[in-house]
Length: 509
Image (cartoon, rainbow, N blue to C red):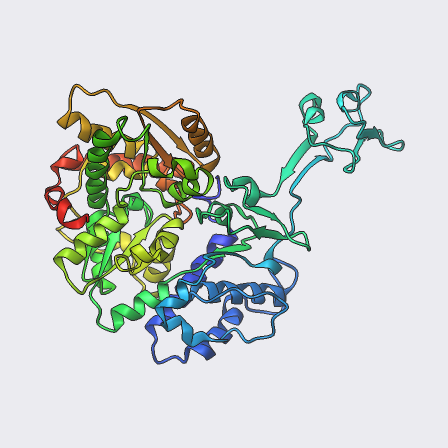
């Protein structure tokens, strides 16, 4: 989880790739096929590799990253094809919507050990050797020459008792970081020991992507397609998720962000917190109507990775997931209700929103999904310094404190409860929430067993909430703090204060 807010080489390369893809989209005079072939040499110049020891491998990895950032499929090292293979497909919308969304670039994968207890150089070869004594399988022995402990991996059952008793903390457990971050247990090893994603289990939360220290996992992007749509004269509205605060620098204000988006050619910008207000109002209505008479409990719907996990692993409880539309979809519907023929680009922290937009029932509402990280590439391509722009006096929008707090774990349930309390002040609402898919699974297990009857359950796939999404760049604690400060500046506390809530019936079938 510590990767966000730390500017590593992986972040540098990702930023460069997103910037170059945006530049390709803007420079229509450049032949895209020739440009993409040249780019790995621009991004990884010289004769000698500076990250891995092989410059050719570095360029090949950059090439596949570029293809994914163009929305094109990832290929294996065994396939003989130029980088520009089928590049014209990047201009067709349906290319991006071809699964899988999240891909392991196999030849970038380090083939990390799945789970291994190992002795480090910190072992002092002590006399007590408690590690040997506590091992239930006799897997730990001493090296005759230096007295250090040695673990026989064939016998080791990974119980960790040797780790617990070592007074030098010289025995450690190493787990594959992407698999450890995956709350769906969707990552295993292929025949070459490299990470492999089971797409039947994967819910595209993107936590593997931000936790791979080799940058071997990447998702597809729509940078190219969105820029080309704006250039073709489409009216594209930017729907910005409430976790945006602080993502484009500490001095960035909503007014400066609006000015930046206008400079890129967006028709206007709308805060998805308005959709969050609509969602809270709809979920509050549903909860009062259905729990406990029709449903034992109700789970929130706004996190697509959480709701997809619930439907995959708990099909009998699927009807307890709120049928309310997500803030992203409600915001898109609101824009299209007022601006027929417009297109909507959701800009947010989330990889799973890309998957949500691929669903046939959402495709018509949301045309593009980009992350904050991808947007920084677009700003860089146009040399827009968001922090130093002149304020647009209109700021962003009239959303509530509760709507903006949707971005932080616990915020969704609080927003729904506040709406219910306004209309039914005597009704007591019990709430339980979980963050991170492993804990979300435990929450639903308990709900299935009847522990949470009558409750409102909130699930967030990312530990910390949307502020910890795979497309965010600043530290999660800092994000949560600045979102809270921004939320307090709203003119009203609860969702019902937003004037668009009166239009909810027009947006919901």
